[in-house]
Length: 116
Ligand code: FES
Image (cartoon, rainbow, N blue to C red; front, side, top):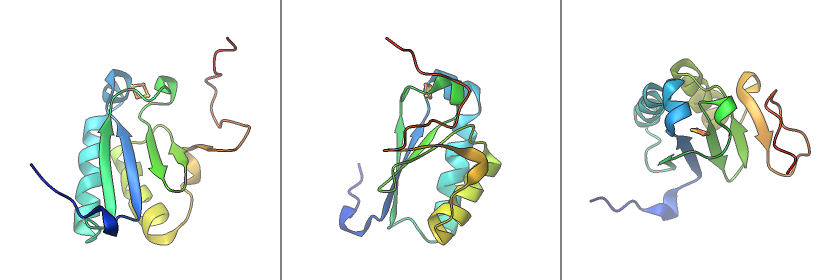
């Protein structure tokens, strides 16, 4: 059992490891993300959480980052490194994987939400 000092956390990454994301390589991506975070000495300020399905299976593998409210899609282990270097360390959006920013009216995906 661990107790993280969450007063130091600046970003929380929700990393889907539901079945669709796992089929798309989520487990390897998650391990890479966590390794990069440790290697960059970011463990105290970055909190990572594995989730089950977060509702965007067609965009697997999906990562959601708070407090920026940015969703990333089709995240591979190579993309995971870009998320750490570009997004976390340099504050730059990873355009190639950008899915959605909460509050926007457009989702950057071919997967259209159900109209029900
Ligand atoms: S399994 Fe990851 S979004 Fe559905």
